[in-house]
Image (cartoon, rainbow, N blue to C red; front, side, top):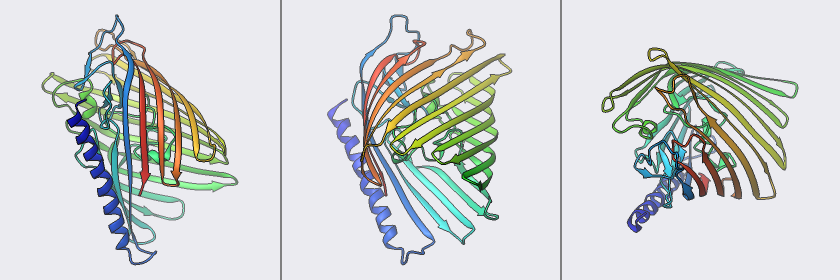
Length: 385
């Protein structure tokens, strides 16, 4: 990486830090009392990293360049095409966001969130929805939201909320992460148990998908229509259990590469987390399948992550293993990809709203067709405003 590029990255994220801090501070100063209906908050993650000891195996069957990044390389953020190689970079995963909440009354609430990323400097609306509480148990929401496919979906951009530098990309990261539609949620408690359930539906169109740039040149437009899903979560003392199901019709169009494909997508996931004060354990499993009925083949992709950590004052060491494996019913039309990765993270909490993390990853390209084998070093500064 050139010195000029490094300087530009530093200026970009210095600007993000100062802009978010100034905007949030100014808006909070305008609140005349503690009962203000308007609340503004922000978050920031400055993440830098690079690969080392990378190799392209002799029987490698994939591209040696991914979205303009020379390989061996590591894809840390699939949705936003964040890729690391041997040059230190702040771009693949750094991000900053501002969230606005406005309470019209005790039952009616408006929420919006805008995020800027190192990999995509265009401000993107992640949240823009209205919530209405029917009573203490039932709530309806309409607008733009995150697809709750994963345990951390709702707050996967907020680095303070989890022990990794970023949630495992083996699970987290598809071409559509949001939807425009509506949902209904039910919450209740009985004994020591807290239970919530939601059902949702909608549609999402992604123009010039960054995810698809990892595999194709030119502009690719992706549409997820007829999105339907439901999730349930149970909290009982130190144990949290969650299950989710999502289905959608997927259309992918890339004129440059003569791609016009349709598929039926189905996905389910389960998560089990255990927090024993000092020790904690995080596990999650998902399986997505795409049935290309007109082409006559199907891709199935199970993935899972399991990790354990220990709170020692302000320090939290955490180890993790993650795996992603595809199968294809027709190898002549689609060659599957598979990866597995071990990681070790050390987190230091500066205070309740900020943390520094250092993470080492060992990534193995099992099918020898996407990126090669690499080790990765990353360091992150996460903050809430």
